[in-house]
Image (cartoon, rainbow, N blue to C red; front, side, top):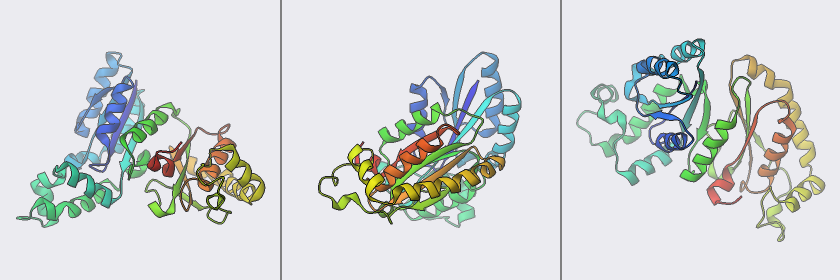
Length: 297
């Protein structure tokens, strides 16, 4: 049986992900305390359920500390376990709570309110404290799985990324090459960040301006009129040297972020070329954050 555990920051899109997994044939359970994951998974495995997805959050803080041990036990029981960690910038989370008018889960727990010193305060004044407190709680498990930064992502883009995640084979380290725009901030899920703004920008060429790094015309320009091939080779050599070390460190994924000014041309092209370079050796995914935000490509 395959089990996908979905966790991360409250308001980062766990419900969207769980719905996408349910549409993909997974038996889904939301807000399940970690202590119940192992017996439920083993029970469903005994009943020949092929796919299970469970969402857990910080409402059961003590349980979250045992996630690592729980995952190891499930794997020993022959269950293929993968953890998906969702994150988002604080300003994005605040905006989402403002739009939905929902309370933060930690604000409903008396022990959390006491720990934060928020007794007698309104939720509107404590939201930022709750978000930062939640980041502290989740810090220990953030690196256990594949991370997705949902800041600014539309639900359709997040669902598409989840479908790509499902195609990854477990076992070997997976490489995720992600292009982004510096003006939108560095992705929270990035492990390695490379700045490709040193390359000539197709944005200033009228014919290429409306296109993206996925377009053959832009690719031809970057490959033949700039130093992109040399930069890609250097980044590739660096990764070739160090990927094995990340793999030996029991990492299941490595997110390589490549940034340019607008996230439309140079970073997109470089991400695609690097994925092409490594796809024969490791499972690879490509994300274009700038294109997802703009609705391009």
